[in-house]
Amino acid sequence: MNALVVDDDFASRMVIQRYLLSFGSTDVATDGVEAVTLFKAALEKKQHYDLVCLDIMLSRKSGQAVLKEVRQLEADFGIPDKKRARIIMVSALGDRETVMEAIQRCDAYLVKPIQMADLVAHLKRFGLV
Image 1 (tube, rainbow, N blue to C red):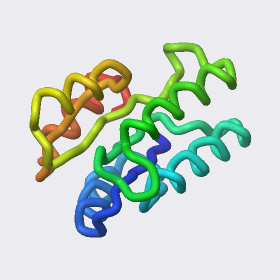
Image 2: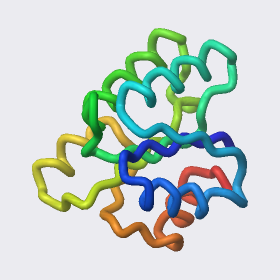
Image 3: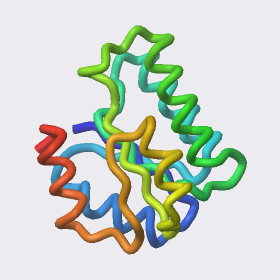
C-alpha cells in the first residue's frame, strides 16, 4: 500500500505514519499545497496513492480544498473510481457541518485522537490490508 499522510501537526502526523508503517510505504505532507504537489507527482510517475489520511485544518490550503483538487486530479488523469485513492479525513473537529461537507468526496472520517483499531478497520473495509 502506498499512503500519504497530510497533517500540519507533527505529533498527529507521526502517530498516523507509525500506524501505517507495517502496511507499506508512507509519504508525509505538512500543508495543503505540499499534499497536492505530492499527489500530482505520484500520478505523473504512475505510482498513485492507495490511501490519503487528510487533516481538515491545514495551512496554505484547507483539507477540503485538497480533497477537491485530489479528486479532480484523479479525473484529469483518468483514474477509474475503483482505483482512486481512499481518503480518510482526519480532524479534531466533530461538528456535523464539517463532517457532511467532507463525506461527500472522502471515503471515511476519523476524529482525533486517532485509534489504530479504527484506522485498521477502515483499511480492511477498503481492501487495503
